[in-house]
Structures are given as C-alpha cells and as structure tokens.
Amino acid sequence: MQNFEYYNPVNLVFGEGQIAKLSKLIPTDANVLMVYGGGSIFKNGIHEQVADALKKHTVTEFGGVEPNPRFETLMKAVKEVKEKDIDFILAVGGGSVIDGVKFISAAANYEGDAAEILRKRMRIEDNALPFGTVLTLPATGSEMNSGSVVTIEETHEKLPFGGPALFPQFSICDPKVMASLPTRQVQNGVIDAYTHVLEQYLTYPHDALLQDRIAEGILQTLITVGPEVAKDPSDYKLAANLMWSCTMALNGLIQKGVPTDWATHMIGHELTALYDIDHARTLAIIAPNLYRVMFDSKKEKLAQYGKRVWNIDADTVDDAATQAIEKTVAFFHTMGMDTKLSNYTDDYEKTASFIVNRFEERGWKALGERQNITPDKVKEIVELSY
Ligand SMILES: NC(=O)c1ccc[n+]([C@@H]2O[C@H](COP(=O)([O-])OP(=O)(O)OC[C@H]3O[C@@H](n4cnc5c(N)ncnc54)[C@H](O)[C@@H]3O)[C@@H](O)[C@H]2O)c1
Image (cartoon, rainbow, N blue to C red):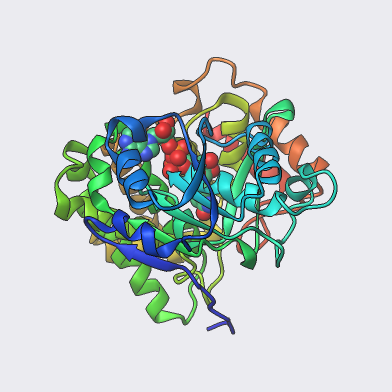
C-alpha cells in the first residue's frame, strides 16, 4: 500500500429531518450568503426548511447558479460577498451549487484575477471563506470533498481545482430531498458515483485489499439500488443507500494508498464544455471506450471487477475483462445512459482532435494511473466514442 494521509474535517449530518440543525451548525452572529441553483428548492419545500432553521440569522440569498456552474455567474456572488461583508456561505443544491460555493469561497479573498484559480489549477490552502452545504442531489460527493469544477463560459473551458481549505464545515444529507428529483438526475447520480469508484479502482493490481473491497461494496450497492431508486426516489431506504454510496464514492477514502486514473473525467469535462452534455452522461460515453483502448494496461483489474462485482465466470483474464466492460455498458443502458457521442450531437467529427489540441495547449503530456494515456490514445478513445 502507498503511504497516505487521510484528512477529512467535514461534519456529515445524515438523515431525515436534519435540515433543522442548520440553526446550530451556523453561528447565530454569522452574516450568511445562501446560494442555490435554478429554484427547485422553492417547489419541494427545501427553501422553507432552510429559511425556518435560519430565521434568527442574517441571510442574503443568491440564486441562479447553473448546472455546470459558470465562472461569470459566480463572480457576481463574489461581488455580493464583498459588498455585504458576508462571512459564511451556505450552499443549498447539488454538485453544481456546492462546487460553485467552493469557488466563491476561494475567490472572495483572492487578490488578482480570480480566473487564475481555475486556469492555474490552484491549490487553495487557506484564506477561504467558511461554508456549509445542504445537499439536494446525491451524485458528486462534493459535499464531503475539497474539489470543485467550474466552467468559464467565454472560452468553453471546464476546469477542476481544490485544496484543503475547501472542505465544507458541515454537510446535511437528508435523503427525503430526493423525492422531487427528475428520473434523469437520479440516473445521473448513480452513474456519476459508479464512475467515481471505477476511476479509483480500475487501475492495476495492488496490495491495498480493504480499499478494493470498499470500492466493490459501493459498486454492488449502486447496482442493487440504482434501477429501483430511479423508479421511486421517494423510497427512503433506497434513497438513503444511494445518498451514502455517492458520498462514500468520492470522500477520499477509497483513493488513499492506491493508484487512481481520472482520465475519463478529464475527457468527459471537455464534452460538457463543448456540447453541454450532463456530466454523468459524458462519463458513460467515455469510460467503456477508455477501458477498450487501455485494455492491456487495465485488464487484470477489469477481470477482478468482473469476477467480484458481476460474478463473471471466465477461463481467462482477457475474457473476464472483456465481459466486465460489456456488463458495465449494459448497466449504463439500464440506468438510461446513451453511450455514444452521436446520440447527443451531429457535430462530433472534429471532437477528438479538438480535445487533443486542448490537452496539448495545457501541457498535459499523458493521463491515467500509469501516465500512459497519451494524446494519441485520447484521440483513439474519443473517436471510438463517436
Ligand atoms: N466536486 C466534485 O467532487 C465533483 C465530482 C463530480 C462532479 N462534479 C460536478 O458537479 C456538477 C454536477 O452536479 P450534480 O450531478 O449534483 O447536478 P447539478 O447540481 O448540476 O443539478 C442538476 C439539476 O438537478 C436539479 N436539482 C437539484 N436538486 C434537486 C431536487 N432535490 N429536486 C429537483 N431538482 C433538483 C438542479 O436544479 C439542476 O437543474 C458538474 O459540474 C460536475 O462536473 C463535481
């Protein structure tokens, strides 16, 4: 096992009725900016619960953070923070709102052009504004990690950044909030979490036995609850298991001491930036083709995944690994994912060369756990995804 440090200071408050605890989790003398997205919280009662819990607090509201949050919108919130001397931010939303709040928190005290935080992929160590979250959509794990992804609309760039100062102080995860989710968003949540685990698991064999078993447990739970919770997100048992699986998939635990990949995400972000395809759906397009192109490099772990997660009984590693990829694609389809870029756009033919050029401009010579996903491999993966 590789050496590691595991630091995660998030106070995760899980369960029905827990939103009321906001009154104690945020200091009463705080000057709060409450940030939310398109307004679904006004229809499903979440806004009412938050407002009720914060009736003794000073709260300014900032709505309109988009799915795949935009730098341009978030800078308006940064202006508000400065003008109103805000000293605590509350994110009420899914990954987009939480990621957006992480950017606002980092940019609030940043001297200079805040776009540098994204373009230079800055590691935020200190000087960020404290914030907490009320999660409304289980998917990203952003409620319990210190990463964020923000899109610069002007240049169609979707860029990740993060750092230890960007952990939420607390996150409230009440599975009841899922009842109002459209099927599409529940499906996205399942596949986003599933692919997060694959990024940290489908690498090469190592000796971190527990990390593998936890990863396999999350995958099996998602396979069990995914199709059912998409049909009925108001079923508390299913919703609670999905919500906790999504958090566990990306709170840092399963990546400790092991190699990780993340190339599917790096390529997927480009598809969202170019075509506005939902994040999870870009992962479903890219991941299987990445496993096909990088087969020799990943086949041992693919075979282990096939045998342990899908109960595949095959004579050879190659056979088990091939079947594992097919099982994964079938699961993505069960969860309502289209797995071809041409299902989303007719204008795909130059996508591979565009993405490769971008990676080269950014100086990315190779991706993946072995740093062997070179620009020509990226091209092959994207072309196979058409
Ligand atoms: N920080 C991380 O670790 C991390 C990891 C993966 C993905 N991401 C990023 O997170 C973003 C995606 O976040 P997401 O998948 O959580 O979706 P989202 O936050 O973009 O929300 C998707 C849609 O669901 C709606 N919605 C949210 N909660 C709802 C509810 N309870 N009822 C009805 N509608 C509701 C939103 O208004 C929005 O229209 C992407 O930008 C992605 O790149 C971040």
